[in-house]
Image (cartoon, rainbow, N blue to C red; front, side, top):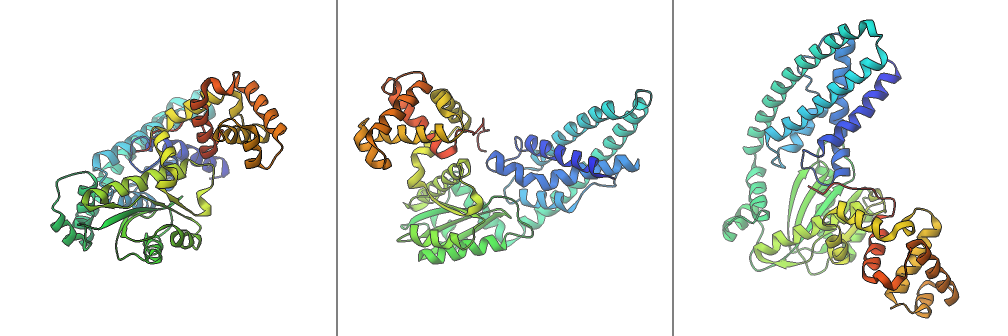
Length: 400
């Protein structure tokens, strides 16, 4: 088949993944794109093989696509939403083939080739739709009949704020929801792992044991994410040590909260902490433990990521440029503001001379186009955002 068609297919699959991430609720946009890429690549290459052979595949239901559907079911993604994601991909795929035909096929052969392509894609879409529908319904029945389904539905009902009996829920989950304070945690891999989620679940259980939890609950969401709750007396140091042993896992913690509502509240905080961690300039692949208590302000500021990024870029202007010099100026200016605009205190914090701080502040003001004190509060917020998410961050879609 050659390298060019494969490279084209992989590049197109990334575009399809980005489009599907807007339809399917799989966490933040970047994570959703990485999760969807294997099935998207499989989808595009299958159709490409059909076009090259001149005959559509019988169903187009590959192992990667089946795994993607299996991962959707515990997340309670409706069948229509799954099909909507594939339909959007098929439309984008048809447009891509149309463009490729216009670029590659000689004009006198385009009509014939386009007819062949669209016939194959139409037949492929029909058989694919039917095959995915049958597979989804069969897997959903299997999952609903499993012992995990009732536990998962109970957890999701609590998180959704529905009326739930604490006594009944505690019995179903085998976890005491009354009285105790609960710490919610989210364990994530940055990209989809092969196989099932058992290894990630083991990471969660190991970390919970390291916390000295008197009781814990673990819920596998899919291959890349596990939710957990624990009743603990201490969480930070043991958890950080546990995460270091598994460098590809991000762990986010909420604060301790009591009772049924606290169970949901701590989980929401852990999700917010995970969102902040995935926005940061530090690579998740290094393994991190992020406590909501430490990132609460940034979580609030980035509740709408697109708005936060736009605000940061507007406030910093040229001071938000990439490069070592702007970074040093931002770091100095942030210390200067945190020291109540006292250069001597900022100099001690940064281990530099007082005159160095004064010079850098003046240079920063030149890049800003106004004095530091003119918009001191807004500037301080923008500098905090730049320190966390980096000045090169572009517009981001709100996290689903």
